[in-house]
Every structure is written in structure tokens, then in C-alpha cells.
Amino acid sequence: MQIKNNHSNYLQNTWIIGLIKLVLFGGCLYFIITKFQDQSFSLRETVWPDSFGMVLGLVGILMIINWYLEALRWKVSLQSFEPITIKKAWQIILSGLALNWVLPLTTGDLLARISQQQDKYQTTSAAMLNRGIMLCFTLILGIYGMSKVAMVYEVNGWFTLLLIFSYPIIRWLFKKSLDRFFAYFRNIDRTTLIRIIGLSLARYLVFVLQFYLLLFAFLPNLPSDLLLAGIGWVFLIRSALPLFFGGVGVREASGIVFFEPYVSDLQLIIIPIFLIWMINTVLPSLIGLVFVFQFRVNIAR
Image 1 (cartoon, rainbow, N blue to C red):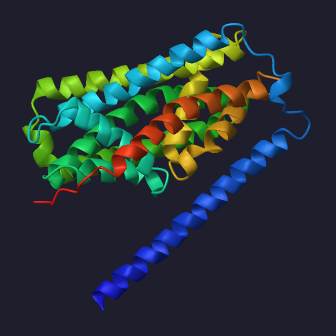
Image 2 (image 1 turned 135 degrees about the vertical axis):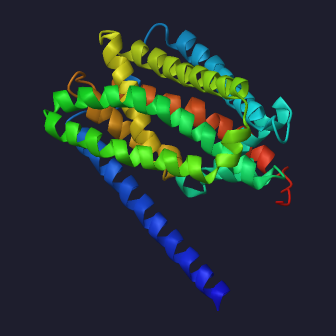
């Protein structure tokens, strides 16, 4: 009876998540189409930057560095209890990226990491630490982006309330993680923690640089601080809604919300956002798909 109830709850939760994904995707798609009603969207008519080829190549190289840093960060996170090679870490990271396409809330990444290690408890703790650190960097630049949106759309009062109510929630989430996985955090040495934080910061800066290069190529007249605020805003919204299809629609819709007051041609917003998604997510996912079929799940202990 208990097994049947668990299976029923799982199906119900899956159905609810699927419905949420569909509603959010439909909402984002409707928003984007509405914004383009008075404009003609044609790649043939798009004026491509003179340096587009060079920028695209540089962003591609940074993509490799980006995921190498993530693999190195994961290798360092496991070295205190279950060391792995950088090659193995790279395969785990890319396979998790591929699994995120079919599993909600980026749980594919977590599943790939946990399934390949013997010690599931400490591996989960390491993954939580990695996500928590990246969330901190995302919030820092994201709040700056949110402040720009609040000023443009004159919702400063709501923005202040959001910050006030967000603080205790974020604090509770981190406290819960620390309480639950205290053993891992207690045993990790300070040098390793500093390395993880440093690699996390380096990876976030690489991502910001990638996005900045593409946006600057299409929007060279916008000031750098505005581009950085837009990047923080888009990445924050994408991190807050990691629900469906690799974030298709979420990035584009959030980009339009931020940049529309400054840009008349919405194609100049959509194209760089679409390209960063293709380069950073789609291409690595295709590589990771190969590794998914090579994995053997380790038995938990």
C-alpha cells in the first residue's frame, strides 16, 4: 500500500511540474510574440556586427574554459573523501547538463553527480555547497540588475519589499543546508573551501564575459554598467526558474523586460541571448548525451 501511495504521489508531482512548465513556457512565448507584433523579425535583414565571427569564436573558447572550471571545481569538491580525475569530472558535468533537458529543476545535474559516487551523502553535500556559492554570486549581480528594472518601471517600493522578505528566506535556506549537511562542511578544510569559492567566482566571471561580449557586439552604444546589470538580471531570472527546455523563453522574455526601454530593435536582444544559450547549453549537452549512456550507477553506502 505504501509503495502504491508513493508511486501515486510521484505521478501527481510529475503532472503538476509538467503543468507548471507548460504554463510558464506558454506565458513566456506569448509575451515574446506580443512584443514582436509591431516588428518584423528576419535574420536576413539583421545587420550583423563586423566583429561577429571573432566574438563568436572567442565565446566558444570561453565555453570550453567555463565547463572546464566547473569540472575542476567538482573534482576539488570531492577530493577530501572520493577523489576523481578531471576527465571523469568533465564527463559527469556534461552528462548532467544533458539530463537537465528531461528532468525538472536542474535535477539532472544533481542525479549525474550523485549516481557516479559511492558516498551519496557527502556527494549531495558537495553539490549543495557548489550550488550555494554560485547562488551568492548570482544574487550579487542579479540584485543590481533588479534595482535597474525597479527604477525603469518605477516599482522601487515593491523592490524594497522584495529585498526585505527575500533576506529571511535566503537565510533560512542556507541555514537548512548547513544544518542538514553539517558533517561535510565541518570536515572540509579551509584551503579547499577557498579553492572552490575561487573557481566558482572564476566560472561566473567567464560566463559574464561571454554574455557581455555578445551583447556588446550587438548593442555597442549601451554603457557597460547597463549591460552588466542586464546580464545579472537575466541570469538571476534563469536561475530562479530552472524548469523547462533548458530555459528557452525565460532568458529571452527576461532580456526583453530589461533591455526594451533602451533598444528599439528587439532582435538585437534576442539574438545574443539565443546564441549564449546555444553555445553554453545546447552544444555541451550534445556532448554530454554520449557520456550518459556510458555511466554505471554506483551503489550508495
